[in-house]
Amino acid sequence: MWSNSSVLGPCFRPTNATPEERSLVTSPWFAASFCAVGLASNLLALSVLASARQGSCCPRSPFLTLLGGLVLTDFLGLLVTGVLVVSRHAALFDWRTADPGCGLCHFMGVAMVFFGLCPLLLGATMASERYLGITRPFSRSAAASQRRAWATVGLVWAAALALGLLPLLGVGHYTVQYPGSWCFLTLGPQLGDAAFGLLFALLGGLSVGLSFLLNTISVATLCHVYHGQEAAQQRPRDCEVEMMVQLLGIMLVASVCWMPLLVFIAQTVLQNPPAMSPAGQLSRATEQQLLIYLRVATWNQILDPWVYILFRRAVLRRLHPRLSARPRSLSLRPQQAQGARLQ
Image (tube, rainbow, N blue to C red; front, top):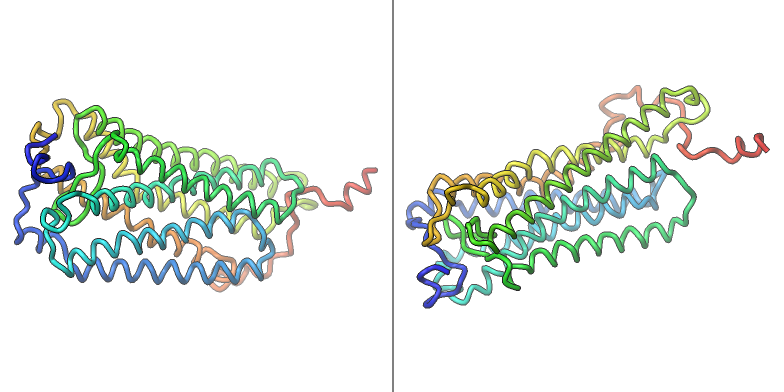
């Protein structure tokens, strides 16, 4: 570890950020406004989701349950990390004096990894649910599907939490990052740090890639059914198209917000010669890039709820009134009447 580990906890490494520079790079008003907008957006999305489950054509859909888990995760992520960052700015505390044992830094590091990875994993889970629902439709109990969906959300949370706890078990380290207002994984050349950084980046990247693959197949299937020979008898339901549009928007937001950070983490830990010096110091350019990419990634928690709020049929029909005049469409599932005629 670094030279100050004998005096302070293992989360401190040299960043060389002066108090004047910290005041220029960070702003308490920006952090507070960012968190307030994000929390309000997610609360609005949760209220819209609650009403959609009662009045939608598919109120018990597992997709809505998974989407609710995503919005709830974004809300809690902004609440937990926002309280830490804003309180740090409000109290003007120095991390070395306020948290010499690194307990608060470790908590924030776990929260950053957990709430960062959960939306990506939930996006891949939602893509898998829509892929099975569109390409392999089958009858199932709505209540059982809801229970399975909530159990799936719980499994995603457990997997993300298990990954976030790895540095506390000796795989990697959480350290205070430039300019000294937040904690995250360490972009160092040590085996544990490199392994943890690559695991985080690869798992997030694979989640985005899996979402892209499954969503592409689902969209192709919907287009085939909609324009196929059986289109007159068997059209995709409006709610299925609506969910697919929302899922594509969530995937696009996650890709734009998170892929730059994930690629940067992988490139930095694999860089040769190492980006981090033996003393634990990164170049100022690397520190600033990490901060910028992290800020871009946090926009995911604000944009996710607006994808659902804006890409609903009620909103789209106001923008395009012709959509409301479309004949009522049928399900992807074969209709019972058609099955009776075949018998």
